[in-house]
Image 1 (cartoon, rainbow, N blue to C red):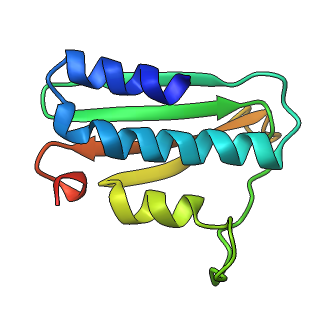
Image 2 (image 1 turned 90 degrees about the horizontal axis):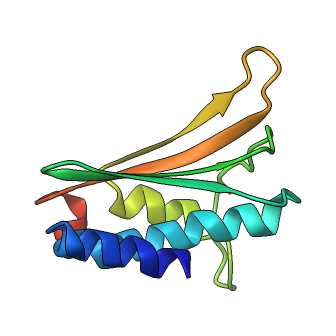
Length: 117
């Protein structure tokens, strides 16, 4: 599974403290793509730097699902709230100019940052 590949990469590059948070957030973003789009493929990029890790999940669906204003007690709806809670930074990048052709949801984890607490 993709999230396990991210975890293995982080452990092998000395970012083991960020691995479980990266697993959770990667899983949440990929699940959102699966649930809210009909794209046949996604592109995941992991950038490992000395003190941080950047993960980006890109798809060819230009529209974004808005963050729900409130989270119910039921299952689902927590993905972006978890990203907000545990990532040191996150965002959405649109591709294709004035007529977007896709987007990437990304997050950054920093050694000693939110993920470490």
